[in-house]
Image (cartoon, each protein chain N blue to C red):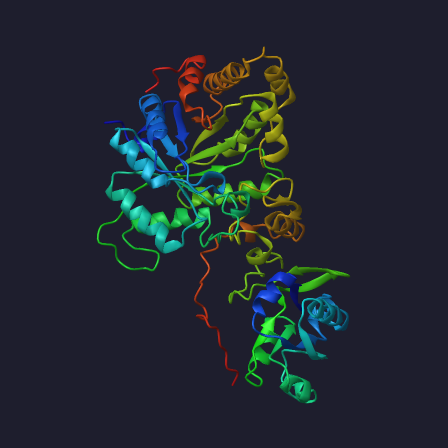
Amino acid sequence: MKSITRQKSLEEITQQLEGLHRLYLVGCGTCATMTKTGGKEEVLAMKESLQGAGKMITGWTVIPTACDTMTEASLTENNGAIQSADCFLVMSCALGVQKIASYNGKPAIPALDTLFIGVEDSPGLFHEVCDQCGHCVLGYTAGICPVTACHKGLMNGPCGGTNNGKCEIDKNRDCAWTLIYNRLKEQGRLDLMKKYQPPRNSQIVPRPRVAKVA
Amino acid sequence: MKQGFRETLKSGKFIITSEIGPPKGTNLDKMRHHIEILKDRVDGINVTDHQSSVMRFPSLGGCLEIKEHDGEPILQMTCRDRNQMALQADLLLAYTRGIRNVLCLTGDAVPVGDHKQAKGVFELDSVQLLRAIKQMESGKDMGGNDLDGAVEFCAGAIVTPEAKPIEPQLIKFEKKIEAGAEFIQTQAIYDLDNFARFMKSARQYPVKILAGIVLLVSAKMAKYMNENVPGIFVPQNLIDELASAPKGQALNKGIEIAGRMIKTIKDEKLCDGVHIMAIGKEEVVPDILAVAGLNGHV
């Protein structure tokens, strides 16, 4: 499972950096390295681009996992370069940005957009499998999630937009309900699809979502 | 005052409905003109709900216009733009203003329309919306709270007889009927043999089926629909027939095809009626009905 990110345009990055000239770059050795958005190579390329745009880079690092509790320890090692920077430019998912933003009062500016939590199907191909909706229906849907795999998140079968097993919004994407139908049929469990599914509860854990483990 | 649509459904007569698309803007002249043309010729007029996810004057507003013109509106209601509170509130308003028919739809996906960055809601699906109506008819809202004044609607839904694969569609079709759909409008059908096969299984359900008739205006349109519109199949012989029409006569050929299909459906009793979608050419619906021998139907 990986946090899937996409680099923002250089234009948007520089817009966010208005008034901030001395930057400390932070990459992430886990998801953003896997997705080639915030590994060592991308951090060095960003360094060059921003220098070209007239920014001063005081230093850079690739933290093993930007979202974990070791972030602070990793950054302490580079304290001199950080102290002299106006801000962090963070090339990790939003989890890492928020962690770093809480570190020493310096602004943490995201260089990436966080798209979804995905799994890797084949090298370099990630797809979203769970929306963390709070009420799992996979037991009724042959292990294929209609909340994430159906564009509309439908609970009671396909819409009229399905076409030859593909989705209304993209001929290259599978219709989730065709997949669910096919697998339930193989399993001899089509009765499950005939069962009425009530509307989902949008307030299982009201936002902002918090859980405390005893 | 026209007969209520539910009474028409129960009467056993061949049912004809049609639809209008509200304008993008506040100029209602064309929509009112279409209402005038249709109101005394068909048994009910659907008003589309931001069809193809293109933002327009609301379906509910169009239905109120139909009421003001003494027609029988069928409120199309999609789940794309409103959460359950907004859907229920609109149903309460519709009921108090004399609207008695609702067609429950999932709604097209947002990215196919003209507000590509908008949020698609889809909190409910069409089956859940049908059940919500039943719950409101029992005097309770979806939160289980008492309503001070309930609603009563003749609720309908849709099915796509040409969907591939058809089996998942049929499962949902069955769920819609279990959820209280009294009538079903189909996606456009053109191959009557395929439709007759679909009706063989659909007939066993206690629901009125209205075959969807979309007016073809050119061979190009037919080919486009075959390639791009899910669940539509125009057979080659109809495409050839349209293509063979003399220059400027393709629309007349399309009217002839639509009228002929309606006549066959009625004569062979393939289903309970038709729903005519002229997609912007509502002024030719009387011509289609004339070809079908059904002018002066109502």
